[in-house]
Length: 234
Image (cartoon, rainbow, N blue to C red):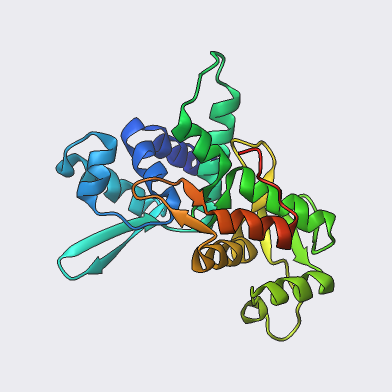
């Protein structure tokens, strides 16, 4: 049962600057060590271990052992959506206008949000697929239409593994409100499939140490020709 105490506990955990920095670093879907997260947060590894223990006990992160190392990652996609929503509220509450640099502009163009594409590219894909009747949406859920199944399959995105018995039996994903665009992009199974396919084809590439995604010239052409997504002004 969700209580006001449990809500306050989660809010307090995320509200700490060091813990918020570590959670944000995990938003690109990677698993990081305590030392790496300590460096991101600007704290000692010992202090980071204490923070990570609190986050793990609250169910916000999980830890995986591999050899001598322990890797930390976000526990669920719901945690990632919570953090993205907090970024949206934080950005909307900024009163002073900030002049952003090239790195910030790249984050706004395309970035990972846990295991899916966010930013202008993510929102544009959602808009284009809706306009072409590849998907149907309500306030939270996304359903792939029969036409969408055909079109995605022709591109090479096989969604049958998600629901082999009945193609439209369940929503393929939830909508995630994008903090920079203020509009939804695809999370969940469909969002993950789009991201994985783009990475596998070399249309998008992850930047080391950043959530930013580089879009290759071929990727720009393919997103334009196959999805009707035009990124020519960026």
